[in-house]
Image 1 (cartoon, rainbow, N blue to C red):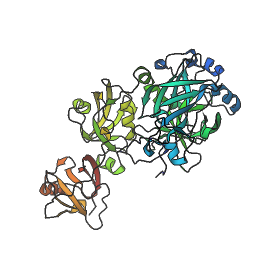
Image 2 (cartoon, rainbow, N blue to C red; image 1 turned 60 degrees about the vertical axis):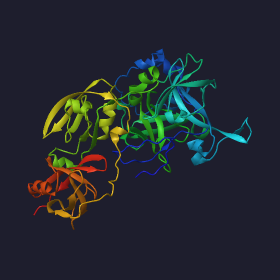
Image 3 (cartoon, rainbow, N blue to C red; image 1 turned 90 degrees about the horizontal axis):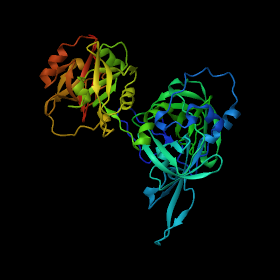
Image 4 (cartoon, rainbow, N blue to C red; image 1 turned 90 degrees about the vertical axis):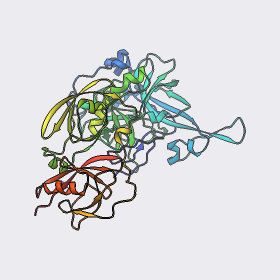
Length: 497
């Protein structure tokens, strides 16, 4: 497990994935300086100052040349990058900037006009990049979170006060507008989907207050889930990223922004993470027009498809997202999606890993229709669902709650083929109380309540035994279980006799 420190003031929990805490690479202490030049802006489709909401995609990626001029690229992109300094007032320990919590105070205190000693004033650093000549700047949300003031310095040393136009804490993105700015050089937005592992990238920022720092590296991996939020899909790079780089651009060799530098692994060198620029382009129009992001909701709980689950469901491999529970009256229920369905495609995009379902659904606005492909009883079905509005994003990833230790039936019985000791559960179903000696059961736990076996309802021990009796030796049984408040599926191998 990655062990690291989170710099966000509010950490996001992602219940269906193993959470790995990360250090956000940029709540430093000062501003973030950075790249691009007017020459690059003139060559870019975005340099003509198109509105943020009408960003156009570049043509398909051209092959990377065997050599390219890093110095020329650095000089060209430098004017497009800005340093961000935020001010925070703290009344006590709870108001401390997260960077200072781990690295110590940076800067002094301001005297309290009401007396009583100095009132702490913290400054924190971040980086951003210009996406519109009229002064629109993108950065991380955690850079400006709860800031009482935001000041931006350009590469030519001009400074502007900035207002927060929009924020999206779930993606950790924010849009600023520089007051009184115009005619600024624009960083062209590339296409992170076309980015290749091994491709050279350039990070520009203000690590630890060392302005205009340029670091070169490669794309180490794509689609990294690091436990930072519900829509994890990070670019991993070995281009050096440190506190103060947060919100800064990750450029490809053509001088296009392909990522927003966001996180580092604490205690490790050469491991940094950036938000793909395609995710930014998905939400940019809403950030500018509404100041926040509305996302569509399918209304279901899902889980990854393990190899054992794939065998139990007779799938050709562990791919897709297994629907564990459907919200009554929600978009999925209205469309006819059922527990036990495996979602393998959304709007033509394959769902190879379960976490991809959440991201692909959230890219669509409430009220829009999406095409969902499910596998049900070994047959593919095409379903059209009209999305609801996502109100509580944590609700779709409900956490697990340990079962309460209430009264339980006295007699404990055995379901030998499954290798478990069971008793009848209050309200229906059968509770798992223990495991037989030599049992190879891995996906269920003591306290789970078995609700179904291979689709057959389990109301009591007798119905469990009847369902178990139909299992073939050497097969894999598909159990539907309730664990606390979460309903999910589990695969249990049936021993060969």
